[in-house]
Amino acid sequence: MRGSKTRRFLSAAVLFGFGFGLVLVAERAASSSPQGANSPPSATGEPVPAYHAGAPQGALPQTMNPELFPDPMVQNAYAIAAKIKKTLYQQPCYCHCDRNQGHGSLLDCFASKHGAGCNICIDEDFYSYEQSRKGKTAAQIRAGIIKGDWQSVDPTKYQQPLPAK
Image (cartoon, rainbow, N blue to C red; front, top):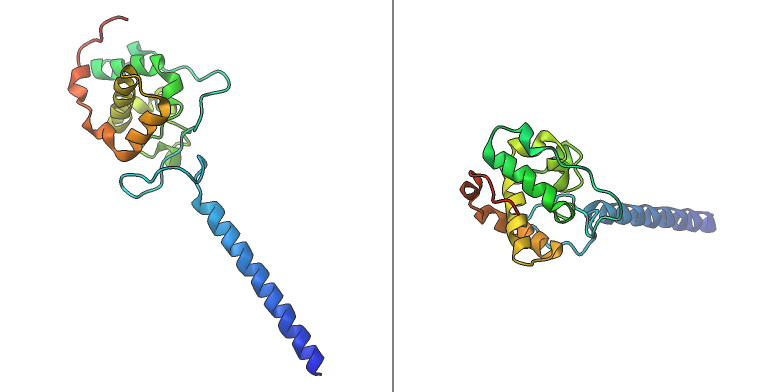
């Protein structure tokens, strides 16, 4: 009788340990971002939105034609996005369109009409453009976006057509 109780106790302990292990594995998997566990923390402490950690391997989606939009600032945002698609592909978007629209990076905002109506997308686009013109890499730009540096962009500079280059 004693051996039977011991066996049941050991079986219960093994099952409990196995279940506990599964919970820990599931929790760790849920807490890690698709970009990897080494993503820097967001300036707000919230999870970093979706982005691609490396350069694209294949063709990127086309951005929408800037002429489709009447607002000059929006036209400039889409024109810039077309020029820096590889950089935008590697950037998160803090309007969190990854959650509600399934976007995988900031580039997706400008492959659709979404970017036209979102100041966060536009400011991050202009920030990425300005930083890339300073020679920053996509990873350095991403670190700045995650820190919130994109909020310092002056979008009024983009209310006039950009010089052709």
